[in-house]
Length: 311
Image (cartoon, rainbow, N blue to C red; front, side, top):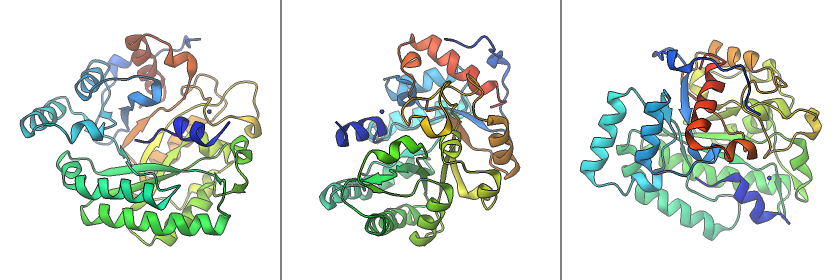
């Protein structure tokens, strides 16, 4: 999956809480939200096999699939991996869309061809969806030109996924501080993304929702009320940074759920639950302090942050 931290850098000059819950008592069910482990989002580099072992040990119910590694597995290794997931009741969260659709046509074609070439392998892994984010600015494209580029390219991507029974999840990026990054602004709210998804004209395109972006975009419950369970592809739960207003929060500096209480995460999750969503919930804090922690301590800390909210 393309990493937004690296993406932004390539285009620009992004204390442990005492309120731990005993997450080992966490019991998942078919109706529960699924605690998902996305290693890159918390500064962990690991193999696919290590990732699954971490998820089992720390009681995660889903993992973000490292697609490029998994599609290289021998058939016997793949089947053994999937069987181990099944035995431990672990599912795949959405995979990262392996396409750079934001820049040149040649870059887009390179990623698109990779997707087409490997779509059957992705399907064979029981991965049901791919997700990506929409940058809220562009260096050279005006809003309408950028919108049209997104519409046409993402329509092509969604068609490939639709033909194979997969969904595409799109995430808007809300921090207002990011809007000054480039010359031309682009969509950065749920309603802006709703317009783009409608224009793509594919029934398999939905939303990756992040509490942090919802907060920074100042989206309210009524703005998200149109969503149905099937519209929500995946969910990320993050908190804001102390000492900053909504207008001064930074895209690549966040906190784990509940660490500051700046964002009303109970309200966010209640809305998600009331819509009937029972899929994966991960964290993506881009937090330097967390990234420096020893792996096992980090995983315990992340799992506890989700358990704090019943995930």
